[in-house]
Every structure is written in C-alpha cells, then in structure tokens.
Amino acid sequence: MAARESGRIKDADKKRVLDEAARRRRQRKALEALEQDNFHDDPHADLVMSKKAPKFQDNTESRIRRKKLKSAEYYKMRYRKSFAQLLEEEKNINPDPPNYSTAQVGPSKLPPRKFCAVCGYFSTYTCIPCGARYCSIRCLGTHLDTRCLKWTA
Image (cartoon, rainbow, N blue to C red; front, top):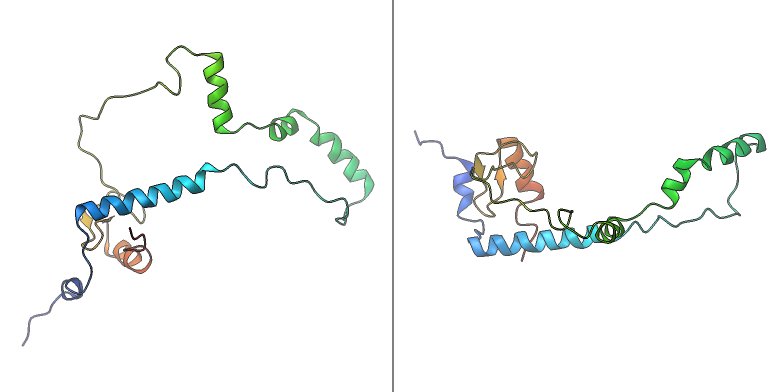
C-alpha cells in the first residue's frame, strides 16, 4: 500500500517560487498602487443635484428638511477639509515641534508580529510561492484562489 502524499507538496514543484528581492518588489508595487488609489480626494464631494431630477416628497417636508440641513453639521460637511489641507493648516498654526509632521518613534525592541494576509489573525505559516502569511488551511485556500501571485512585478 502506497503512503499518502500531501497535495500541496505534490503541486509545489509546479508553482513559481519568488525570491526575496522579487517579493519585496511585488510588495512595493502593491503599496504604490494602493497609495495611488488613496491619494485622490473624493470625486463626488462637489456634486450638485440636478434641478430637473424629480422630487418625490411634498413641499412641507422639503421646507422642514431645508431648515434642518442649514445647521452647523451641514456647514461642517459642506466645508470639510482634506487631510492635506489639515496638515498645511497645522504647519501654519504651530510651526514648532512637536506636530504631526515631526512626530517620530524609535524602532521597536520586540520582533515584528506576523499577521495572516487573508483574515488578519496571527499567522504561523508562509505561502511557498509568494511568501504571504496565512493562519489556517481555510485562509490558505482563499489566498491561493484569489491572491497568490496576482500582484506581479
């Protein structure tokens, strides 16, 4: 009778394995793509409702709602500042450290903690082809189906 083999071990020879430099390049590209997505302000912030859009409420409710919208909360939302504007304002108000731009902390004395790339729990295993971390067989399955080597350098 033949000994049972693991499917992961059998398939490991067929998969592409990245070296550490390629993994770092891939990770840097993924972070740059995320930063590019997050950099822009909300494109829908200045949209105005068209006057031609149908109104499905009677006039008494709309008058009451208009009065409620003109409260302080309305102006907070209308004249909301972006993060970049808040940082610039802080530099002008308080140029001397400590402030957000100059706050720093030294490196940790503890080793870095390792988290699952799928669910965020503590991880103990590493994907062989791409080096991503996972915590369980279920997360490994999700990782292999959706994430493994999807970000290529």
